[in-house]
Image 1 (tube, rainbow, N blue to C red):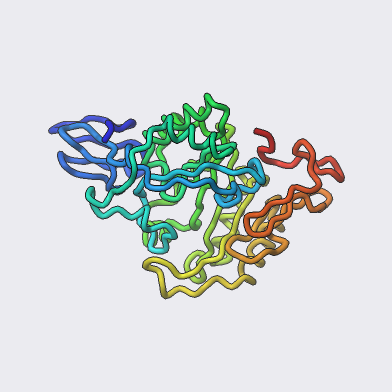
Image 2: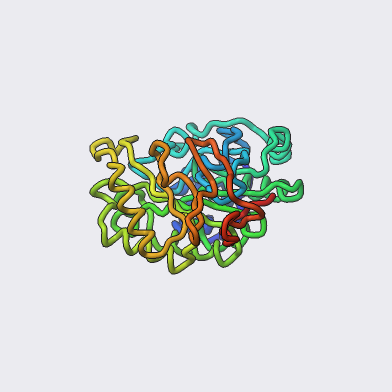
Length: 336
């Protein structure tokens, strides 16, 4: 255990966690929505700080990040827990914690995690798989050390963090993929146990802080696939920055949401075409076989710049982040 960052002491031994947008107020012995932060004797403790549940060297494209050091590897780490309760969670074995006894993992210090990333030849460390916000103490200590060693830091996040958490992490964070699950408060409340507005604020806040941002939406037929809703979601991204890459992923029944159909690829392609008409410059289909929507094209002359097959990436017609044909500056982070 480790005393948590970002909490306030209240009356009668209560504490208020200000790490994420839930702002849980906890009595003695209570844990938050995430089940990995607990009030012990009037102090808030992180229960997963010294329990690293997963480490792996991944292609950066797996996050997915398509405009951030393409064709590099990112040393990925996770601890258990999440501040959402998504019925369709793809990593529920890591993210869904019932109680304190169910938190497993290995004691690996931030110093050892950074050393492992360097040995693996990775150019970045990704805080991913579960929700990195709720292993904040481990993440920020590792990120500080990683920065000192010349590594970049990446979050794959649901975006439901507090402004205070983003402000504290921003100096060390280079890139993020934010999961924008829908553009409906009803969807967020019913299927994720959270809210929409803080996620939108995080996306805007990350851009304001100069963090490279990509957005992913898992398209679930009949739940978040309404055309008008998707148009509002696309317009939001375009208003923040039309150069934000948007990944629209195919849904397969999982966890508790087993009665929804698999997303038809035609719906994915139609949604991406609408986004292109609205003005988003970089659009990608996820969880589909190799297709033109997996590749990166110059938004000016439509030259193929980066070709992808699965997680294999071939950077073809780019130099110093510019289109090799017309010289258009391509948005992203292309040098370590």
